[in-house]
Length: 172
Image (tube, rainbow, N blue to C red; front, side, top):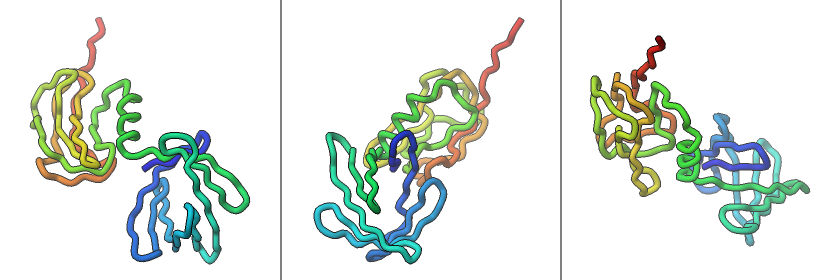
């Protein structure tokens, strides 16, 4: 998921959890913490020999929270993977020559093979993430150079799925 505090957005991934020991990745940095959930959204966190008390309360609608930590207050928004995916898709204004999966997923069906020519809006593959299916469509006319996925493959976020050869407009 992504967590937004002010203008800063960070990608947070739960790597493992055994009892109170939690391993998380925040923007590529791994943290091992001991977390004990207390009452009313309060938790005790032990990290690097330091103890912290965090209080988290829901504020407003959606996934907006107020977090009190060490005498400081933070307003955060939790953006789930589907919201992140939709935001990334909206930001895409130009097609790149490499298609990557935006989140951990399972490839349900691949519709193209190397050498295929595809047109803007054609579906390249269908993926499933968080029990939701999404079709990945190409944003411009191009050719498929390489397909690095197969039906049933499990992918991690940002894994390369397909390489494309973009059509270059000829200038006279």
